[in-house]
Length: 390
Image (cartoon, rainbow, N blue to C red; front, side, top):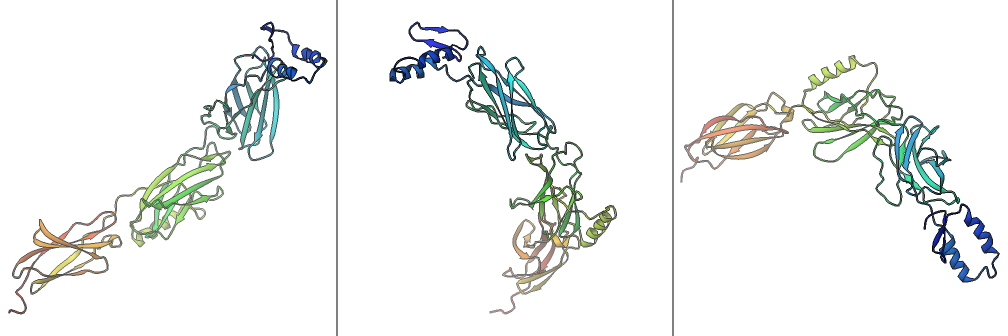
């Protein structure tokens, strides 16, 4: 049935008379047998006009520091539309209110004087000329984001009052080695759309482990943070974001590898400190990438034959020796026909046994790094005869 109309079951026509329902009720209450079940059936199926149609398409069209602007689509049947009831409430607080709006005004409203940087829930309800109320249409969304209006029964919108546009991405993130086991990470402070900015957040991990550590960096500290106790020659990923009550900005992610010597790191740290007016700490969503670390070649490779065995000795690389993880030793009759073995980085000798007597072998050693390896250094060795003949 259409709102604000009374359907006459006997005549099968609409009585298009304003306020006829109230008049009909007065007559109805005076009828003998007012409690008769048949009359109650008439009340439930004939006289009651039904609930007004609700509004659709409720959305946020603009926000500022303490204002939200909304709009909606009017119901398809507006003949008995009297107006709208617009209500709002702070999701995490006591700020709330309602306002009425007539059918002659545009289907939009500015909600002003709101708590700054806060999230609100908003509803719009249709009020008919018979003082009936439709189902409320509610909205949930953050400012400057797309509002979800996919539900046919309700449209929930959370509005973050403050941010339009949303938080900007942190820029100029970089990592500087301050020792063989530490990074200083720094970034540029946001200077626009910062009214609701709460803090910066930084997460870090050894790349590929997915074991994130995260920390909050307060706004009153310099935009930098020192990471210590890291693994030398390991690749680290840093991720930096700006945060407000509604969420995070787009992330800025970088990767970095500890690769400098202690002397170079100390010099870099002195250079940084000379340009700072105060100590820095870091928090960010970032990651700095540096070239892959490759240890230098081994040196002084020598061999000594003892019967059908060869003892190989060498000196660790002079370039990035801290990046050597293991040594690879290979031997054979030619560089293309060899056997190989792996040895820990703390040992620089290797005994090659069970070789063919009186033969020449090519022996090679290279340093295995993280993530790359050095070139192989080769030399030759001649095996002797058996020590004890049968």
